[in-house]
Image 1: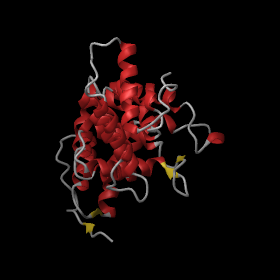
Image 2: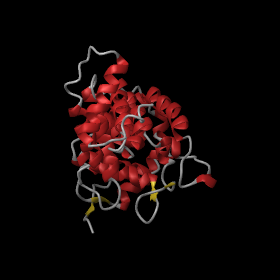
Image 3: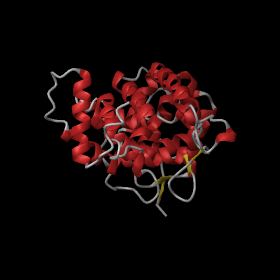
Image 4: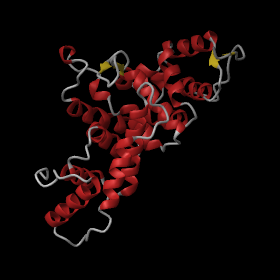
Length: 288
């Protein structure tokens, strides 16, 4: 058991505004190896119950949220915010993920909230940039209210998630790259997990869609998100993400394709190159 963090009777929140102080303290506590004591959590809870967070505007909250997300243990910061009741006030879309099941490759379903915490922990281990950490925080918010009769499957979560992520980013004034990567992860992460080397045509189309040729940094950040999501499952922490390796092979196979080709000819040439790299004979009827 980790040692308990024992603060002074009234911790210095480091802010003149108590609502922002709750967030600052959660971020600071997440940087320690010790667990926060009950007295600290009670104090944070009292601050939240007193309504101090309501006094802080979302754009003021954003820098404090970044402080925790970019720290060495963003998952611990989110957990502390949840335990003191702050998460449901500042990020209700994220708080709603806890207790929601999702189908897993393992013997039991995963809890989406706990899975998100694990993914953030992997992001910290890989020194992921802010946009990737933010995407991991919010990309599943469309699954929070999936019809119970369909669980643990989440039909149409992309359609529900897009407006929520857009509203969340507008509320906080999040940078455009955070919005862009979160929406890309929402739409594409599960598709990346399912990518198969037997289908070279769709892989070529996916690479184009993900910016692998025209926006390599964006593509790399999405691969970071997908890798952290993959490693968040039990027993996978620190593992090599096989789908990223597969897509890297495909992208390298397309490196010599003449960009002056027509879109149709270029796509066909890429599919053929990927098929050769994958040693697949099934590319020709998979271009649609």
